[in-house]
Image (tube, rainbow, N blue to C red; front, side):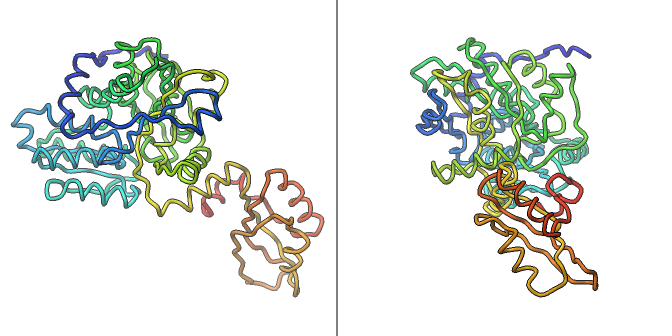
Length: 421
């Protein structure tokens, strides 16, 4: 294990200066009490609505602070960045506002909504380049281009000015709250926002406990902290694109390791249920990364009782075309959606028998894929079934086996399952 030395820590004077710099473009976002979450957790749950910026995420803070700090020569040469979407929009807005030419690299898999918003905010001042499957792929291409063209790279998290810009979120929280803050939950991708909050709260509210939250499928900060050195993950789940990075920052890692109270991960499927709940019950639209902090509350239910808790809602750049996938992942996590290979006897009435005698009264077929290609006695079909309760699964499987319909269960076979979800 290698102990990483903290080489930089955001100073409160620099954070205050960043607040002055970004005041003209980053309006103060509300700190709102969530009545629903406060009741369900027995605590005072406050949502810091960073999703309500004009670029719909906190990233405008760090991007504008960084670009504003550049020399005139650097500004004239132009800037380059890599982003899964939110930092791209912040840089695009800053480029347009400051009249700086920018080139923005984004992963090919970036939701179209984020690409379109980036182009809209940047206008004639930015060029968008889609390259790579992950943020890390895009970053490598962007840095090569940056060196070749002599431009300045605007890092989304591993930069002092970016971190200090993000730290202004903490200033606003403390200015807006009438009570001492016991806990702050913050989403962690590369660690820029978490590092900034560590700087602000250590200086102004050192008793506040800061909890970092990552997606279960991209635990780069957690793994680095556990192993005592920067770890680059080989494979990550890119679903929570705003917080899915293979390697966190060399500046942010030692700050988070030393100053976060705890670093945890939450399952992507549980995050999806939070997104649906926020939309259906609170009329709040968030992207997956924006729901991480609220999702984490369930894991601290006893610890936060009676406390003042802030969840930073980091962004709302969600593409409506992802709704079906979000619902699917939520159902899978809740063990309410199941896929099977069902072997139907090659005789009339077999499908009717399956529906009437095999499915339970509350079971619903949501996926059916069948093609008769041979004269075999039993022909397979891929069937997706949605249940009302997880307890209905075993009886369903038992009925299929007793009546010779059962072929296989696919939810626990990732190599096959990836083609369905």
